[in-house]
Length: 468
Image (cartoon, rainbow, N blue to C red; front, side, top):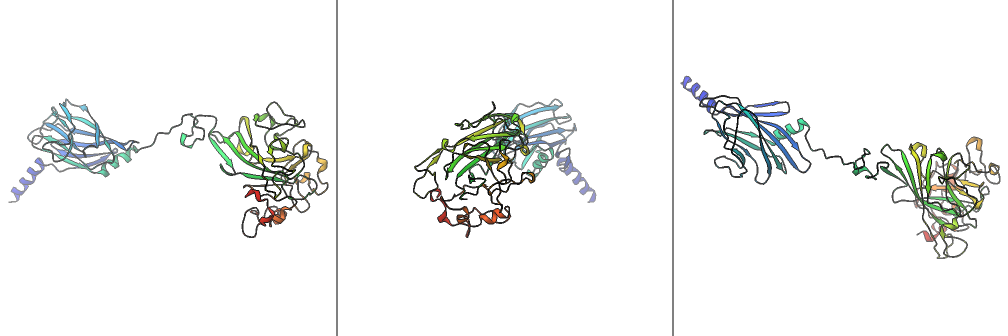
């Protein structure tokens, strides 16, 4: 009885060989039987929601009654999901008559496609061939049948098998990087995808937000301290290349208030940039004779790059009547032209050299070129008359780097990163912004957000109503 059992086991293995699985070299091989094996050779995830799969079929050359010649080779796949089926003979003399795209495959126990009419592989004839096809949608559990004689010789591959080969070979979908201008920045990240010299926009305060510069123009005297003599809103775009070096600066300026009789100019200084590093300046509004420009648009007579935006507020505003522009509660609202300045550099510069917006902005007082009004502790230009420092209410100490501050650290110019609701005429800024003095006197330590409309921060009745 034991001998008979042993005979039955041997006969079963010969007729129906046990499937074996081999993992190696990022492939998975399974034994169909009759000398045939099927290997998942490659799986490539395409970037169009498809997968290209190559199966390799091998026969070891065995003959005899258990190793028949292959009649057809079938691959299971859901109808409508496969395409691009091709066969490539690697070794031996295997031939076939046609590729049957199914999905019905006759006696095979599944639907899909098959390589039909195969000859000269199996039945003592060694050889190998590949079948390549594309699946749309998702990977699938798939069976393959090496039909030889009456033997179906089927093996099953799971989705996990295909994923293993794909991941092991690193053939998961990696979308192609599109870089039309060849600057090394993908188009999807490039603000200038067709310009290799430009790549990124850096806006201040942000792409759709304006900041404010407000000045008291009676320096070195304190004046009425309403900070509405000249109020300018601005938006700056620093354009950099793929190496994050600055190529150009684009700034827009609008004058929202002129609460003074002076006709002031407005300019910026790039404290670490030489005039020779400026290639060109465009967009300046120059109508007076006191400003002299170099050929590149920077101001002449300067060791640092100085750009005059406009030399007279009257050239850029459109009054609604009266001697004041948008500082009286009279129902009249004037407008401002937008002055757009474009500064291009001879060679790209480090951002640390160019600096941050608004750079070093200042007023030129009433057309007198040697009188400049800067933000506190910002350097004057070479054209300043230093004899004004320390006179009247000014307590500048140039040797200590202290500029444009009063005895109580109060400034003549302020900068905030939002649009300021400026003061009514003849009203000190401390009456409208209740924590301004504390901010200024502590050098910005206390109440750095003094300009916000938070509870207890403002007396709205002191602010120009036209800003609402």
